[in-house]
Length: 617
Image (cartoon, rainbow, N blue to C red; front, side, top):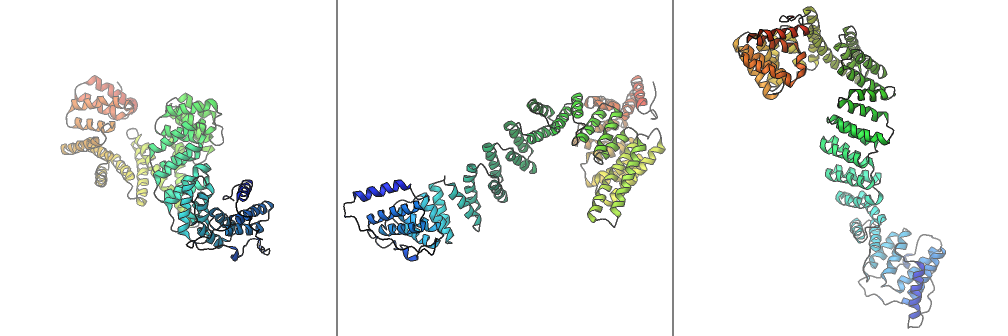
């Protein structure tokens, strides 16, 4: 019992007091016969209930000492039921003794005789002497047991304030607060805050604390709790939870800071390293990702997931040979093999290795059927393998359409098929339009065939998604390419009404009016539209090309040349755009620079030999 001092110390203490007494030894008081029919109860008559406001009798300390010694002796022998009777005699013999009264109250409480224990404790707390944490804790428990909740809360607070190391009492108080209605969440969090560091942030209590904080809008306290828990335990899960919280809240910098802390403090944590590396790659910091992963691999056998990440980082650094090495290292891994082959395909595209690009994406698709369908389709399209690409797409469209129209299937299945169908329609429209553009000058019939299929797909898509501006834009551009000029211009103007700052539409419509050159007013209108697009995106090379073409149409040839000659500095890849060579050649020709113009038309011939201005030098 926490109120008691050691048995031998008390015996010695009581013996000395009795030996030194100047009065004649008191006659031994025979103990009352214990009720042996009950192992856990003491008769009500055995409880001293003298009201505290009455003067306390002096009592007989010798009798109290002797009875207390007998109580201790019987306790040591395991005869608890008789022992408590002598404890009662001791308390009756010395009614002003605070210690004896609280010891009796505790004994009664342990026997679940809470009402009697409460009566004794209520009297005891008014006796002379300073209160302590043990007494206050006992009072708190008894008030709780007897339904006096306000008093229980007061004494729990007192007990904890007197001794904040009594974790059992603090935990008992936390249970009381959880049970209390309405809940005092601030007090509950205070108490949990005392317990958690002492129990090493045990998961159940930690989760409950976090739940209360988040439900009550204490987000900053929640983040501080995660930091404290991580600092105390170095358990990566706490910092991962902090990362996920910030990530869910779209607080990118704070989320990354959590990953940095985790990697710095627990560099061996694989999950943290993967997220840290992936985030660095996403943030276009592949060199830092490579360094972190290389340091890890110096002392650890890397899992395929880490090697895959290392390959991504090397690819981000444009170290394609190293990236290829890493991806080949895990190409046969059952989990990461398909991703490795897909990455090898992307690298092959960058290196203009057509055969490898197609072969690797086909392997990836065979290892994980369906996941790389669109990538495979794009490879086939990019390399002119139309005999494979368009039949694939048509087959898949037919399959999804049949699924979404089937009355025998669950509605959720049909809805999913419908979503896939319209997604494929958008891809179909885009691919046919891109393919058609290759034949504008070389084979107009092929171009028209594919533009028509693209238009059919856009119209079907817009029937189901009439507000899809990206598809409206594609539809308008197809109309322009098919020479349905007035319809195209009307469609672009409708788009601008809905979104006046759509710079793509501003440029496309402006360029179309400039290129048509039907009237000087229309050309000037086109230049104004292109200027508006450049205000929104001033470094866009396509828009600058449109601007130069507008200046050419207005007869401002030198200004047009100045704009055109600045473009390769901004985008070297423009040399592969046949329209650049047409525009620059015609501008130079208008300036009388015939030799330089001829060079441009020769370049145009290499890229688009059927173009009307293409001419081999």
